[in-house]
Amino acid sequence: MLRTVVLISGHGSNLRAFLGACADGTVPATVVAVGADSEAPGLEHARSAGIPVFVEPLERGVDRDAWGDRLADVVESCAPDLVILSGFMRVLPPTFVHRFAPMIINTHPSFLPEFPGAHAVRDASAAGVTETGASVIVVDDGVDTGPILAQRRVPVLDGDTETVLHDRIKIVERELLAEVVRDLAARGSAVLQEN
Image 1 (cartoon, rainbow, N blue to C red):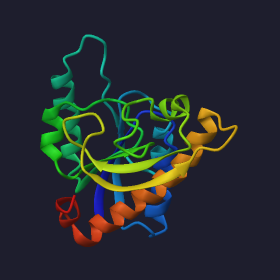
Image 2: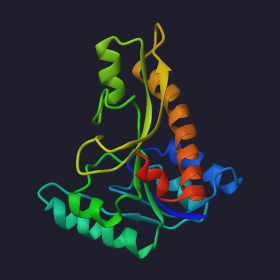
Image 3: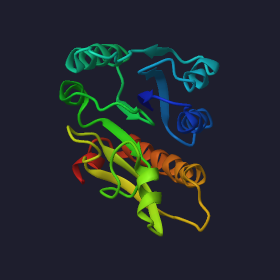
């Protein structure tokens, strides 16, 4: 059973699905804490499940490295085997990444390296592509540039709004995250070394 800490920024729909998969045994992991950079609505999923939560805000004018160190200290105190960024909308400083690398992964709503960054679904819609996707990557010092662990295409359908497309991508993100965590639980860091 992998001990995981999940970091979120929003409503936590992927977190809710991941907690359910852990609870029903389809993913061999335990979420030991959920953190956010603000009092995100998604923290309620963790609170409802009796999982500790923490908030480490990055306020305007605050030194990013100092914020990253504080966040890393809290995460490290939970003794995780794996850190999962699931809708976490902050770029982590290298000092944070290096403390947990390579056991820090991110879900992303595009078929990387296509459409990196915070507005991947909007960017795909604006580009007029016929398909986009979802990816799970190892977090590195760049923005969505780490080794790809799993990804799958998602079609863009006529009449899709950004919200409708994003909801369809999230379904695939959840499936890929579950697959990657199962693989990591079974084979450990060998999974990361293959990518």
